[in-house]
Image 1 (cartoon, rainbow, N blue to C red):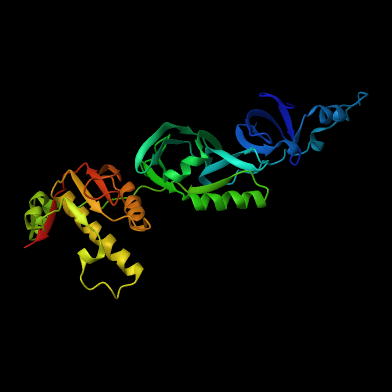
Image 2 (image 1 turned 90 degrees about the horizontal axis):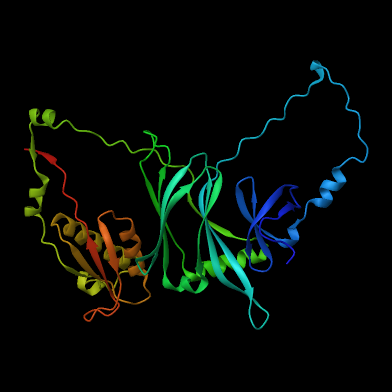
Length: 348
């Protein structure tokens, strides 16, 4: 093998020197330059010895004397451009028995192109269940290697969930920020074909451009409201006036409305999601610990949309879509961590 771990190499197109920190298949290296790691093809690097030799002077040259007035100004180092935070997928290729290049696995990196040091908690879910979790820090204008996932695992509906917070808290910034990436197998296949055509090494999914500001909640003086004729009451009693909750919700359209045949697919899906949200909120209001949603099998669009919504709900401890003796694979069971309702007000 021409290169080994720790070798110093020269990046041909930029003239920078870096260190080999990993091998990616047979044709690529992972090179670290000033703390930033990125993949390069082996034909894009070389050993720097020839460059160093040609730059050396065979005979010492007397330096020209310079006076104070002749000293050149130092070159201004341009500031790094902030480009947000991304999740990067690096396909690792291998050759199969037929001599074709195939993807064996994906290397995942968290790339921070902002001026903030970020603490993060990274979790991968398969079919809604957590499989791998990692908590660490990615520093400003650097990247962090997360882990490898087998290429075949993309068929198991992976969801990449990340919660960020500033390593140095800022009162003006949000205490945390959550985001998730869910890529279907077809999308990844298309991405891989695209980077092959463009002779690129990886593809990325943007997570955010700028870390968000803190949301300022409006504070209400309940004493002043009471003096102006508003009646203050405990919102936990409000559930007495609500519609009863259900432990099982059937979202088949004929169970929601008898007049559905004239509706388009988009209108049907919208009505199903509204019905789900209604009974989800009722479950919370009635302190219900779990909820079963029957969405059917079909093409999986309704199921996927509901799962995406559940991943963003703080009250959801977990959810699972597995075989059920009554519903088969057409239902998702949701386990809730019900929060106490806050005090509200109304005017008499």
